[in-house]
Image (cartoon, rainbow, N blue to C red; front, top):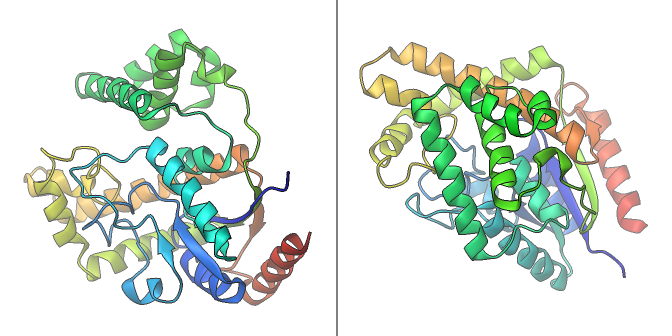
Length: 310
C-alpha cells in the first residue's frame, strides 16, 4: 500500500521555518499543519511565535487557534486531528506540510503510535497532573531519582532539568506497565521527508535573543500578563516558555530585566533540547538557511522535488 506523502519542517526558533514553509506551500500547493503544542491556544500569539494573519493568508493553515486556554489539548487530540487533516489535504490533491516541533506531538502523528482512546488519554492526563503536583513540593532531582529507581536506562538519557520528559517517562510506565526505555520503535505512518533547519550554535543563540526582544517590542509583556491572570483556570496552557518567566516579575519577586533574561535562557535551552530530540528520534535532512540561504534553499527545493517524484 502506497503511503501518503507528508513534508515536515522542524528546527529551533529563529531559523526560518515559517518563511520556508510559506515559500514551499506556494510552490507545491501545500497546506500547513502547525506541529506546536502551544499554537492551538487562542490569545497566545506572540509568545508562541504563531504565523501572523498576513502570513497565514499566504497559504492554508491548520491547528492554530482551535481551543481556549481553559480547554485541554493532548498529544492524542493532536494525533487524531492531524491524521484527519492529512487525509483531507491529500483528497484536495494538496501537500500536507507539518511545521514546528513539539517532539511528542510530531512522534504521535508521524509514527504508528498507539496513544489509546480518549478515556485512556484522560487517565494519562491525571497521571501527568499527579507528577506535576509532585514537583511543587519536590525538586527536579527528586523527580528524576524516582524515574532512576524505576527505569535507570531512561533516566540516564534524560537530564534531571528536563522535567517534562521525566514526567513523560513516568507517565508511560505508570499507564502501560512498560518501561520508557523498553518502548518499541514505531514505523513511519507516512512517506515523510523531514527538513531540519539549523545554524551555528552562537548564531542561533543570538537570533533567539533577538527574537525575544522583537516579541517584547510587539506586545509580549501584555500577553504574558493576560496569561498570568488565567493561571487558575488553565495551568497547562499558560506554563509555556515566554510566559511563566514573567509571573514572578508580576508578583514583585524580581525585575523585568531578570524575567527577560530567563525567557532568553530558557528558550536557548529548549532549542538545544529540540535539536537533540530531532537528531535522535526522526530521520532529518539538515539545511542551513541562516548562513547559506541561497545555496541551501535551492538544495531543499531540488531534494523535495526528487522525493515527490519517487
